[in-house]
Image 1 (cartoon, one colour):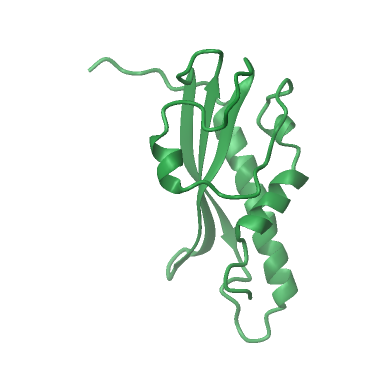
Image 2 (cartoon, one colour; image 1 turned 135 degrees about the horizontal axis):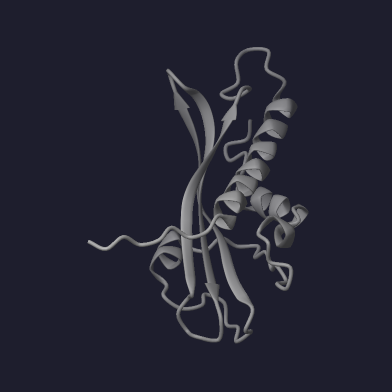
Length: 148
């Protein structure tokens, strides 16, 4: 396996291959996938739009953290932290949502005799599946805040 089997370039390629507008239920939006990753600090701390846009239909879907987790009991997973912010013409977002997703891996870490092409394909499929998991979570109605 390459040192970074699901690096930024692979993520960009995968995101561009997905029907993001349909997955995220944003038919009026035009997805723009950037070639370079943002620093995590920018994603976590920015309170206004990250891209210089004044469009009234503007949302940010960010892949924040991607990592491989191996657990002796539960097995191996691809885990991703996604962030989403939806703006109108206001400088602050009308909706902010983030969550972790995870997809089970069966070919990683590779054992002797593992087909490395199949392992890489599994990892790419897991990335696409995690995007779908995030989209499903995003489409659920926002949780009501409880009075405390």
